[in-house]
Amino acid sequence: MAGTKTVSQDVHGRLSAARLVPGEVLLAFIGALTLAIGGVGVMNIMLVSVMQRTREIGTQKSIGARRRHIMGQFLSEALLITFVGGVLGMLLAFAVSAALPSLPLWSAIYGDEYTENDIIMGVSWSTLFTSTAILTIVGLISGLVPAIRASRLDPVEALRYE
Image (cartoon, rainbow, N blue to C red; front, side, top):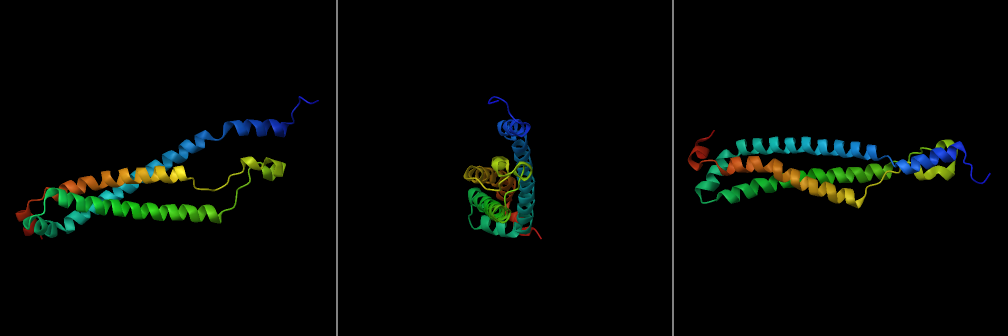
């Protein structure tokens, strides 16, 4: 009976072929949604920063700062906030993946010969590069609206603002 398979070998073969692609799509969607919500938070922080620093912006513009200088200042602040959050998130991901052992899937039931389908926590370099690129885009987009608003302030009105 060289051509027959046991039930466990058949289940193992089907699971190896599937590779849980829908789970990866779900995790990618959750990650994109989280980054979008974080972008809205960064935008709100930057809008509040523009409102609180209106007099400072008016002073900068009255002594000769151009629109690009004001935009550069607020875009760099938005990118800094975004990158600090991203680095903290990546450090947390490394810490969680190092702290949690592999989670047994089929090896708990069928033995050690089925360890290839166990869930092993890890952070891949491609995920880090992709998330860094997405963080850069989110930081630029969420900082653009406040930067444009700050750069368009009239210096006289900005100096009068209380």
